[in-house]
Amino acid sequence: MQLTFDELGTPLRDTTFVIVDLETTGGAPGPQGITEIGAVKVRGGEVLGEFGTLVDPAAPIPPQIVALTGITTAMVQAAPRIERVLPAFLEFAAGSVLVAHNAGFDVGFLRAACQGHGYAWPRPPVVCTLKLARRVLTPQDTRSHRLSALATVFGARTKPTHRALDDAKATVDVLHGLLERVGPLGVQSLEELLDYLPDVTPAQRRKRGMAAHLPERPGVYLFRGPGDEVLYVGTSNNLRRRVRQYFTGSDSRGRIREMVGLADRVDGIECAHALEAQVRELRLLAAHRPSYNRRSKNPRKAWWVTLTDEAFPRLSVVRTERDGALGPFGSQARAKVAADALAGATGLRTCTQRIPATGADARPCVLAELGRCGAPCAGRQSVEQYTPSVRLVIDLVRGTDNSALHAAREHVDALAEAEHFEQAARRRDELVTLLRGVERGHRLAALAGIPELVGAAPDGAGGWEFAVVRHGRLASAGVARRGVAPMPVVDALVASAETVLPGPGPLRGAAAEEAGVLLRWLTGPGVRLVRTATPWAEPAHGAGGWRPWLDRAATATTLEHLA
Image (cartoon, rainbow, N blue to C red; front, side, top):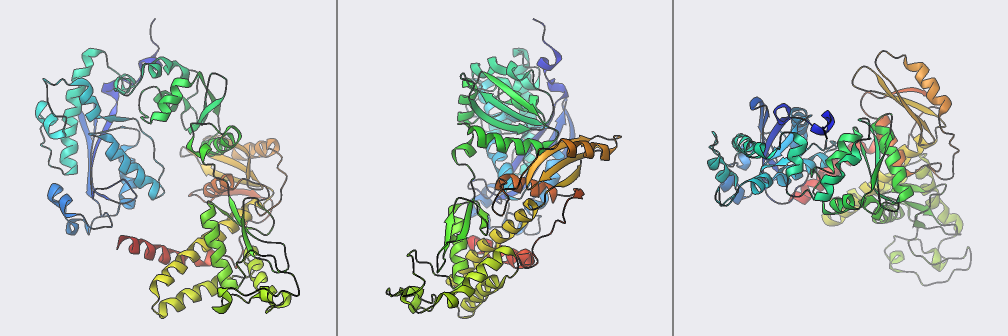
């Protein structure tokens, strides 16, 4: 049977490769740790460009790494940090196939750096010359698959030196030598090259046609098993290309290979743009709880801090959103830290016993002796005397008074002035958690309180991507490409948008994760508000004005961890 052009794939001679090499401080991949990046862009055997720079890893370089690479801490002190280098490298490598010797190491550091500094990892196809060499070369060719040995085998023009650009140049010649070896075996396209890698099972190869019906458009894909159950949910800006990668070995995770082996078909849901795909993915994960998605095993349900309903209320951490609650928090631990910090700042009790409005005669705990509790359990504090502490919490959640935050900061300052530095650091970190919870809660609640809002983001090609948001939920999405009048599109989207009735609680029934995705999109660069039913405003007395303090506290925490 004659193959279609799509099945033939991208010829290797027309494929743009970016061969990359990193030098690091050693250790596991993380937001920091890269000391040098070197990359060479090639296509059809021709060098199109080079990229090379030292990187300040924000930490001393260990002596054994200095001995190996020759890169010293003094050499990188004036170099840019990785968060400044990443945008330039991602632009240099955009649309290319990444190649590295032992690619898991280099790609792992690059991916971790992107995640740590807020850059989206583009998930490019990856070719590992180490894996390819082990697949292609025999023991008679070489006993070692180290880059230096392979450079000798293929007569590389640049000798590897454990410096990034030199090693990347050597890997270019190694790649070309390996491609010459696999060419006579029928590997002529990028897809065939990826399919040739040793970790691709026969089951994966046979199922490659399961992606043929998917459009090359943004959307959500669902792998379904023999019983039509949803095994895995994901998103992509190009459904067909992304799903095909599951059958070409670009994803080496064991559980994903197992999932592909079980899958009987792949369904695709085309979306107007990436934002709609993100939201649909969240909803599908919540609805199906697919067994091969990590987020299904640990669903990101929100935690809230709320006042109990009793004569002497205390703060309680709960899973159910309710009016007057503070949150959402991503974990129970963070919610408890915020609750403890807020109780300490306002003077609320932390014991769990129920205290009658009058006649309490229990024995006070040690917190009362330390002056950190008014001891209502022992009758030392009346309901009227206790109420101001409750009012501080209510007003902070409403955003009408942030005196509780100032009281917490004054306590941190007092501990530092008394040279109780460890206690001050702990209280500072607790206040940071509380501040972030207050800030996120106010921002999400402000968005969820708007009955209808229409946002527009440039699509990068002269058109617009639209989102109709109602009470913190995506109600409709669409696009107006270049040359199309945008306002008629907006009117049609509003007219056909989902009806959303507000529910209880600060988020009006919206899911915290979906509201967070919409908030990040709406506050992203270039996004404009087309119309809004009510003004979008956040509380004047919330945590918004604390951003400089938060930044200083975060910097101090980072320096302490590095010390």
